[in-house]
Amino acid sequence: MIVVLAIVVALAALYYTLFVRDRDIPEPLPVSPIQHLQDRKQAIYENLRDLQFEYRLGKLSDEDYQQTKLALQKELAGVLAETEELSKRLGLGPSSVSPAKPKAKPQTQTGTLCPHCGASFAQHLKFCGECGKAIA
Image 1 (cartoon, rainbow, N blue to C red):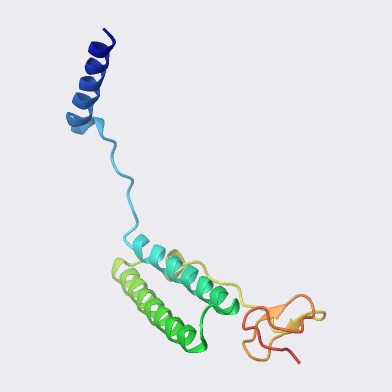
Image 2 (image 1 turned 90 degrees about the vertical axis):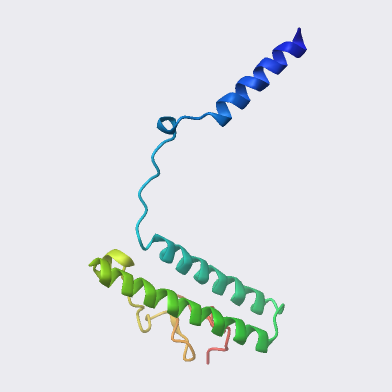
């Protein structure tokens, strides 16, 4: 009896899976035409952060770090150019493509400004948190 019930349930599940009607499938959500480019841009930024982290831990040599960083930056430049081109073709303004980034303050009164990369920090540091070089 249990075997017959299991077979009936299995056949019902198989029938339901194989014979789904088109009207039962929900409509896909509309996706922005440049969404895939924005997703790719975020992935490249994440890869650059991971690369810098691995380099700071000493897992990468200087040569490998520079080569990989340059390749990712070239890929990012291509994605940004393609995003801009597509947004112009679609008539989208630059504000709808990516939010404007606020400009960093040159130096705070109690903070530190890195002379190498220009990063600013709210507190006094001996080494830059961005490039890792010593701040005089």
